[in-house]
Image (cartoon, rainbow, N blue to C red; front, top):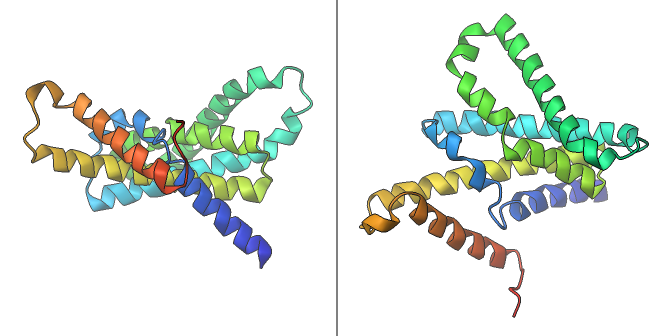
Length: 197
């Protein structure tokens, strides 16, 4: 029972703390081209959560093997990118073999889910935290869900800003950055951090 509570706590921690400074949301500019209907948002969230879960699980399993290498801290980022590229290739081959039409229709969504800061960050954070394989998978799932929440919050902000009377100098990216800053501060305060005096 204690291990189940620990896993649930880790999932909630990853979900809230990864959004605390909204760092996963600032790399989603290409994702905003995906139509954010409920169906496509759920699909993207499912794919992204699966990718971050599997990637962090593999990184957690490979970390003990890489620990004995000399200067491994310099090689880890390259190995993470290679691992993501290999996973992407395997998924594309399987989908091309089994569901070619789905792959053709959703190739941009699949590429965006594999190659973004959430998938890479899930791998790096779980390894640097020293999690075992189960904790790595749960943390990766929390990071994927957190990124989905950040995308949803940004899309809602864009919808609200589209009906507001924003001065011309602040329309577009400046208004979005102000919105991200305000959401970041509110989430940062929500998790109990204090600003330096």
